[in-house]
Length: 472
Image (tube, rainbow, N blue to C red; front, side, top):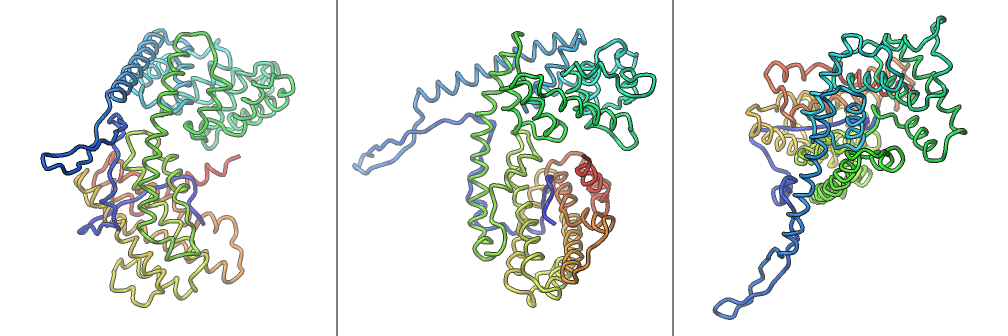
């Protein structure tokens, strides 16, 4: 089973760097980028010297760009703070806009302050008398932020028989927000399951009565609700079809989003260059011609999991982990015999170089890459956070190796597992647990001895992720 849309990795003892990784110059996204011009000069002996200089034009242009961007950020930040004091629906609309554009990382403090006020208002019955759009939008934003809000508030929009009122079918913006809010349901919240079905049906039924732009937006939301999408990838659609209005802050936010998109694009290109060079130098694509050779796809997955521009180094390290999950999966699916795969798994469980002699060549070089990359990332985690996660990572990799042979045996025997058996093993073989562990270690948040210990055995988060992904 290939890795499913979430992922990460790390290790030490001492580190064994992978091939030429240290030669790749790290890009710092916080520093402005200047375009150098090449000039030839001669020293006192007449010898030619090539030097790089920053043109005054490029320097001035970059400075002006940074100043303009800062001004527009402050303009929007001040407006969000001002509107947030009134706790009006406009403040929620502003938060929704920055989140859909993927630039909410600039305004985390302001967003939290605004939502705290709305949570207090909600607790005092502040949702009574509001229309469906406002109630559903507040509900979704609060839940996304981690506040618990009872889904029972939507009872206000049901009739005496417990069904959503038919007159709601005329309010497209309210139905859109109800559909979006229903995506944050938890087990047992039947009212949100009903809300999802009702809003989806009414929105589909009303498409023919909408203009082209509005209909396109509704179709997009039905197929890609915000909670189950990646804002960066959806921002342009929102920007073009749904982001309209006469308020001054909308123009400022549009400009910030455009600037941020250009900066992020440049940063991600530099990351991809580092990733592709690392992958080429590693040599696995040449040594394992049967395996997938998709560094661009793997880097894209890291962008999905780690969206903050400041996490450039973590995205690069995460991509290395993703590549190994795919390569190992291909060895189990396309290459090894059951005997070889069993030995392959045993070697990883023991984590010992000396046990590799009996393995085929492709498995040896795969394990060498796994050991090296794990040691390298562990060393980085140790330097940054003061803890060596090598033991946790060994057990984490062993867990996914223990899941792959189960699928190999099913395939070899022709047996089809029942859904419960498949999901139970899929929690392991999907690679989600491995990914979550590596993300946790690379980010370093809550990095305590107790939490690291939980990583070794706790698969409940992975199971929850897979189960939620299956929800219609």
